[in-house]
Each structure stands twice: as C-alpha cells, then as structure tokens.
Image 1: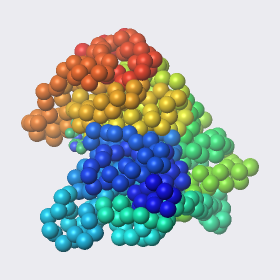
Image 2: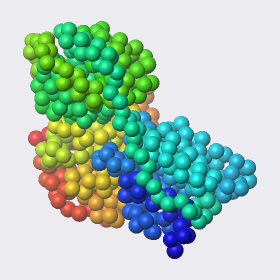
Image 3: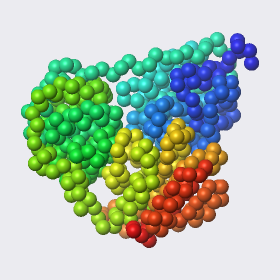
Image 4: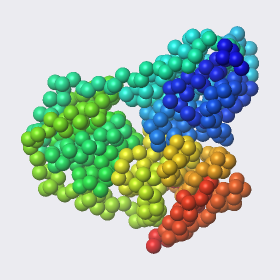
Length: 537
Ligand SMILES: Cc1ncc(C[n+]2csc(CCOP(=O)(O)OP(=O)(O)O)c2C)c(N)n1
Ligand SMILES: [Mg+2]
C-alpha cells in the first residue's frame, strides 16, 4: 500500500501505537477486518482471545499490572455487548482500557433495517460505563474522538474509553496521519489553604488514622513518614493494598471489612482518606464506615468529595501529591502516642486473625503457600471466590500492584483472562490466577489462549464444589440452598484436553511443589485445590 493510501483502519492502529499502546486483545469479524489490515501494517501485537469479555478483562489485567494502556478490538453488536461486563468492571475499578468496535454501514445506522450485528444505539449502551464514548462518521471526527478518548484514559482518575467506527469508514482512504496526543495535564495539588487546614487538623490529632485507596497506592514514602511522625495507623482498601509494606508497624493491611479495624476508625479523632471511594466493596460489612472524628478526604474526583460521607475537609486534587505536601510540612508534628499505647499493626492483626472462623484455615494455608512461592513482585489476579475475599486481607503485600481483585463490579470470571493480560504485559514477573470452581468456568475457554502463547500462568482453582459464598449467604438468610451446588467438570482432564499442564493438590506441600513447577515451565498449569479435603500441614 502506498503512503498516500492509508485507510482509516490503519490510521486508528497507528494512532494507538503513537500513543503508547503496543498490544490489542480481540476477535476479528467481517465488520472490523479493516482494523486488522491496520494491525498488520502498523506491526501491532494482537492476542486472539476466546470471548470478547476476556479481551477487555485481559486489557484490564495488562493495564493494572503494568500501568500501561491496552486496547481491545471487537465487532459491532455482539462483540460490544459481550465486552460490556468487563468494561463495567474496568469502569468501577478505574482502569484505563480502550475498546474499539466497528459499527454497521453509516447509511444504515439508526434506521432499524435489520442489518447484520445491528443495535438500536450501540454507543449509548457503552456510554454508561466509559469516561468517553464516541461514534464517528468521518475521519476528522474520528481524530477528535481519539484525542478525547486518550484524554479520558490518561485523566487523574483513569477510566475506560470507547470508540465505534462504521465499517465503510474503516476501509476509506484518509489523509490523516498518526499524531501523539498531549499527555494529561498533571493533576493539581489541592489548594494551599485546604492543605494547611489538613495539616493543622493532623497536628492536633490524638488518634489519627489514614485510609489509602488506589489513588494513593504510589504514595508509600509520604504515607510512611506521616504515619510514623503521627504515631498513626494506616489501613488500605484492596486497590491500595501494599501502598505501605503490610509488615510495617503502622499497617493494618487491607482490613476495612473487619470489626477491629472498623472500631479503630470509629475511635479515631481524625481520619484522612486519600484516593479512596470508601465504597461498599471496600468495607463489605456496611455501606458506610462509622466515624466519630473529623474526616479529611483527598480525591482527584470531585464527585467523591460530595458523597454520603460528608467530609469536614475536602481536598480536591492529586492524593499522592497532597500526601507528599503534608509529609514535607510535617516538621515538629506532635506525636500522638496513640499507636504506641494501643498496640501496633501486628497486635491489631492478631486480633483480626483470632476472629477468623476455624474453617478458613485451609484457605489461609493456600494463601500462605502462594506467598512463600511468589517473589515480592509476583502478581496475583483473583476472582469472586471466598479464598480471594480472605486473600484481599490475608495475602501479605509488601508493595503495591501485586494483588488484584475485581472489587467494584464483582464480575465472576475475571482472574484467568486478567492474568493472561498481566503476564503478557510483564513477562519478567510471575503471574498467578486464583478462582473458585464456579467462577473458573465463566472464562475457562481462555486457557487455550495461554496454551497457544505458551504463557507461564499457574491457574489455582479453589474447588469447594459449590457456589460457597452464595450458599453461606442463603443459609444465613434462612433460605434453602437452591442453585448453589453445581456439577463440576474434571478440571484436570479439561486442562489436559486444552494442552495445559494440570494437577490436583490436597495439601500445602503439594501446592508449593506444584506452584514452583508451574512457574518454571512454559505454558499454563491448572492446579485444582481440593478445598474440602485440603490438609494444612
Ligand atoms: C457475573 C456474575 N454472576 C453472578 C455473580 C454472583 N456470585 C458471586 S460469587 C458466586 C459464586 C462463585 O462460586 P465459586 O467461584 O465456586 O466461589 P466460592 O464462593 O465457592 O469460593 C456468584 C454466583 C457474580 N459475582 N458475577
Ligand atoms: Mg466454589
């Protein structure tokens, strides 16, 4: 193809490449093949997945593990609706993924002629779970929408973006050439007077607690200085997990759902919540944390500062920059003595652990084995399963970005495709997927993607032969357990049929050995953990 005959499809892919995207997860169809011409000409890596939901889950895992943008390509109609759940997951966890879809011919749009893959309004379906959703009718309109899509992906609170492009436009020649869109403007520091007020509140605090969310996960140094100089506690959300090493004396880990931590938060006279939604899924046992002290919120998303918590001091701006400012204006801070008097993080965590039910010991042993085998930078992508709810707290993280969970939206099936994306993004780091027996079956077909690409991804299936959390919820509500026991496949045979390695493990030693072997070989390994018979030691 001559330089003067670039198609719009090629222009899209070249623009993605110019703006830092090097991998596309997707499934081609007759509507979007012009994007695939673009992939070839731009020499962009494409990963064929087995379901569009998994394309976006994989792009999400890629982005969470590496901090880099990733994209998914899908066809009009069913490709888009299949991707929607994973897009909503990325929306609720503030993950920047770009979904590019085709759309039917421009002349047919909105007319209801019943053309292939027709939706009444494809863009409108996606708009509710994206920061930007565009539907272009010309190449120049597409350029403007690409610019807006990247601006939303790079915003202070990143969120997914979406573009659809009619198939006739995708194949048209264009004079446009890829351009590098400006990076996001740095998110501002909150206003000085607000920072000074926060500083004063902290200086007078006798029982301070810091809560760090995903927006503060890279603010470890500032958090460390603040909790040390104020003798404060730090608790994180799951997204903020590891912001400060969880072995630090001030760290309560990601323990917001647990009563001892909620009691400390209620007893605090100043709570500084930085880069966190304080959402129900951070707390689980309540929709709102009880607080009796002054709440200082720091958030780049202004909407969060006006929610049901009613902060006494709302700092609009970058959480990490604000914490850094507070840390560097901290000289002469009065040590409260609260933590020294009340007991450090380890003592507090011992109280939490003493309250865990006896039947959580096998799951704890599995998490412990995982911790032992993985190096500090190893990554776990987890699913909606009891062992992951426990691991959100009990898997020790000494750094941020090593434990990911589909927290906000809670979509079953996240772990395996997200781990595939994470491993592709970070081939030098060990990456493990952890799912329950039921959730594993939502996206198990993408084991084939890992086999095809020889991806080293141990896939731990926590098999309790039930939709155990739902069964337990039904029991607690006095409802007969209907629909919570399902017949499972022979996971090991199924994995073998896909060309993966697989083993069933019944005790911690076998799991440790199996995990080490799985991390040492090319290709995925399914490790089925027999949760009901698992021997702890
Ligand atoms: C897409 C989707 N559908 C339904 C649910 C509701 N749900 C949450 S956990 C769960 C059961 C999962 O069972 P399993 O994966 O075996 O995990 P376990 O609770 O047994 O550890 C269900 C159905 C969900 N979170 N997401
Ligand atoms: Mg189960």
